[in-house]
Length: 352
Image 1 (cartoon, helix red, strand yellow):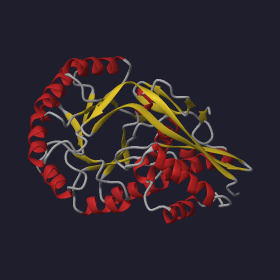
Image 2: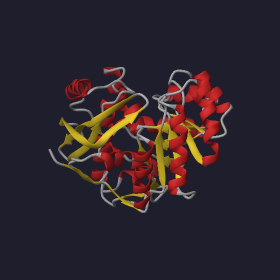
Image 3: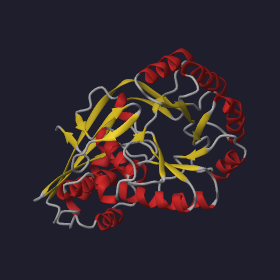
Image 4: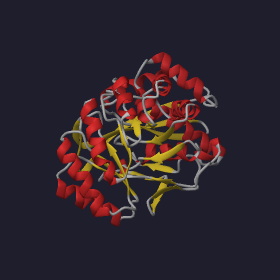
């Protein structure tokens, strides 16, 4: 069964409000929908440009044009081999590769007549997801936290990293506003130096924080380890792990307690499986995260997580913040959890 054609087209969605983190802000989410077409069906994937991989809509479109030309005629039965060929064509461009990889798994599921998580073997029925609160003033932070609690979320992720004093105030106020039952995670997006990170982690310990993501720069593994060794809260590496080589280096150096895997960051499900295996072999649980993605790759991330016992946490929430997302299906949100639809592939519908 061979690839007949690869189509792709960009879409953009307005955010409900500006999204601010330590490394920048955005009002628009860009995604590129990918369709892998064979005589037996169509698989749908998604690529999302982002600052972590330094991809833009333009670079992704250029990469997909190359893949469209060079992958025509490839047998879809061996997704790993197609990933190897994409790597030989372009060294980087993981989000563009993820778009093709995700579409291939969707197509496999449709051809087999089963959800993608069943291909690997389902380990879980659903995944608890957090809802992210960007960097904003104290009152707005509290209002969002209470709103999300009322909507059924059982976990929140609070972005920090620009102002230590204000960050501590926001975390304290959020805990007081939502009570002790709400899970609270914190993400600094590389915003602190080592000493400041250690200081703030000790200050927020009383507020029952589940984990803190990427407190220091992505390439400062020694600093990340120093923070982890002096932190009363578990540390999760995000921007520091983009490849399986990164995961192995971080695990061997004992630089973090957990790893946040993102399909756009590593290149899709195939490579996410490799990273998760390395993490599991080294005693590190993982989280499935997201960029500014629509329901297509959010659903792909969900299916990946449901098939892997070691993926214990989910931050699959970007679709909640988009006003005009034309993709439908995939899953439902129920009592704080993402629950997949019992449909073949990822169960997604995408309108051109």
